[in-house]
Structure formats: C-alpha cells, structure tokens
Image 1 (cartoon, rainbow, N blue to C red):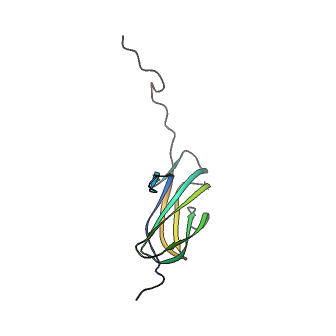
Image 2 (image 1 turned 45 degrees about the vertical axis):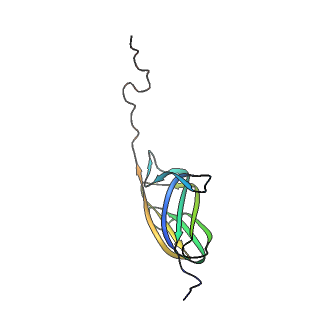
Image 3 (image 1 turned 60 degrees about the horizontal axis):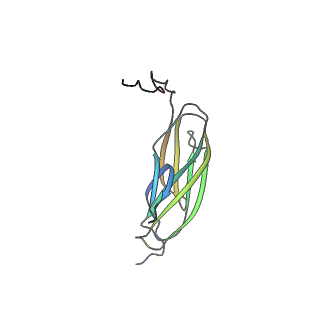
Length: 147
C-alpha cells in the first residue's frame, strides 16, 4: 500500500528573537525563548519568530500558528501557510514572523500549532513581571588607577 497523503509529525516548535541563515541554508536561531520578562504591563513585543519543523508526512498541507492570550481564548496572532512534503523522509521548516503583539498582563500565553485543523502542539510561554535592578555601588565609574 502506498498512501497518497500522510499527516506529518511536528518535530519541534520554538519561539525565538531572531533567525539567521548560513550559506549552507541551515538556520541559526537567536534567543530561543522559554519565557517573557517585562518591567511593566501592558508590554508590546517588537518582533519574534516561531519555527516549526515537520517530518514523516506526504502531501499538501495548511499549517496554522496561533498565539493566545492568558485567558486561552483571545487570539493575539494567527498565521497560515501552505506546505508540501513529497515523501515521508522529507522535512519542511516553516518560519513565522510575528510583530506588534501586546501582552496586557503577566501570566501564561499559549502557542498552538495545527496542521489541516488538527492540533499537533500547544505550549505555554509564561510572561513575568520583573523589578528593575538598582545600579550597584561603583557601577559606571572608572576603576581606581594603580599608582
């Protein structure tokens, strides 16, 4: 039996600050994020990327990436992309750039990854309120000269 369509597996999904590409075509992920820290809320995030790697599938597919607010229902971002896997040993790496998301409060925010309306992964990205650190004594001054 040789099926014409096999729903792929999600090998990984990572949120990061930036992406570069080597001459070989390999991606370099910068600032892989497991949490968001801010000294105040609401906070607007400048730019982030969600990188998804698919494998073990065959056919044409539609991937959907959503970012949900802490209430788990409000959609802050949604993007769709088409992809194709010619055979089960092929891979597809999809990069979604996200700009201008506002987080209104600390708490868990959620990333959902779907393929053809089937949820493959849902993970939390917690946002924390952090206090500004006071400068330490002597910070910003030149060290005393030895003489």
